[in-house]
Each structure stands twice: as structure tokens, then as C-alpha cells.
Image (cartoon, rainbow, N blue to C red):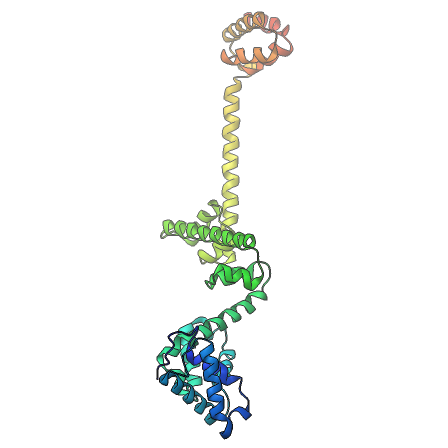
Length: 322
């Protein structure tokens, strides 16, 4: 049987069952039953359903009332009980959960198994799912509840309403989740590029790319001991690199400074002193003296004397001349 609902604001069968749920036993006694049917038909007419003057819809109402009398309690009582029994695990698959509810209620109320009623029952299951998800989310700390509902693909407006958030609060979590998703994608790309590298090599690669440790453990599929071992190996490698870099810098600095006084040949010493005297005639400002000496490739040992003890140049010159 298909309920006709050309003008009503909702499914006729639910409107009928809602009215039946409100009835008391006195409304269903033999002498009162027909009056109750006419009363409900009139109320449904006022709600926008054409029942009193539509044979099919009126028959639908009579059939529902007969089932109510026969079973001894309203269909909605069993439907609500079946919905209340749903668990989070059940509603992970809404269509399957809907089928389960229909099977449970349909064992007593076969009319609920009519095809046009399934979408309405699924709507109730989706609401039950949302209630269960919301209850779970409200028990979580910080923004975990918001993240939980976002992961469950709950609409943002619904999350705001259910958790009492502001739009800005939701937007912040959405942005954070987007950034974390982008980072996970980046790490996945790095691991793909690593190919057949060893676990330690992969971990080193991710550490060098500044990936967070918890994400390395999760996405690289390694344990904490491997992460620690890779970090220690990298520390050792870094220290060696630093040592080599310091040696290279010291060597470069020594080359730039030039030879010590004792290592300068006499003929070169005389040439350097002559150049320094020309510079000293041009300027007595230390910075300028050092700059011009550097441009003339004069050893730092002589430059230091030129700016601090220029009279000592005569002594060095005499020594070089023999």
C-alpha cells in the first residue's frame, strides 16, 4: 500500500503513526474507535493531508489503527526503541543500520517495510548517528571533539550548533586539520621518493625535512628505537661535519691572514713595509689602513703592527736588510 500525500508537509504514514502514538486505551475501545478515526482524519486534513475525502489515504489510516489495536501498543514505540538501541559501531554504516531497524520493527509491523518508508526510517537513523557522534565528541578534550565530527563528515553548521562553537573556532580547527593533512601528504610524497631505502635512511630523510617525530613513527612505520638510533647517527654525522667545517674555516682564515712574521722572506718583508708606509701616508684611520693592506695582500701580522706599533716597522726593515 502506498500512502497518497499530495499536499501534506511530511510523509502521511509518519503523521498517522504520530497521531496514534498520542492515543489512550479509551480512544481504541470498540465504541470509540470509529470516532477516533474520524477525529484523526480531520486533524490530518487540517495539517495538509487529504485523508477524509481520499479513499486510499483513509484506508491507510484505518489499517494503521487496526494494527495498533491488534499489537496493543503504537508502532512508534517499537521504532524509537530500535533507534535507541543503535550503537556507534552500528551507525558507521547507515544503510545497514537502517536495514537492521526495519527488520526489527518489521517483525511486528510489516507495513513499515514498504519501500517508500525506508528513506524516512534512514533519516531517523542518520539523526541517531548524529546524536551518538555528538555525545562521543562532547566527551573529548580540547578541539578533539570538533576534529572527530569533521572526520565523520558532519556539516560545519551542524558542528557549530551541536558543540556550541563560534564560526571562528570552527574555522581555526578546519584550518589546522587542512595544514596537518597537507603535511601528511608531503611526508607520504617524501617516503614515495625514498623508494627502497632502508628504514634508517628514510627516518634520516624525514628528520632532515623537519618532519615531526610522531608523524615519522606513524607514516614510516618504524618504532621509537629506530627513530632514536637514526637521531644518534645524525648527531654523530653532524658533529663530524661541524669539525670538518671548522677545520676548513680555520685553514681559510690562516690563508687569508698570510704568513707569520718569522715566515716572511726578507725581500718580501721589505716590499710589504714599503707598501705599508705608502698607506700610512695616505691615512691614519685603522679601518682604512686595514682595508688597503688587505687589498694589497699584506700579511695580517704586519698589518697589526702597522696600526698598533708603526715604529716597529723600522726595526723589521733593518732586520730584513741584514
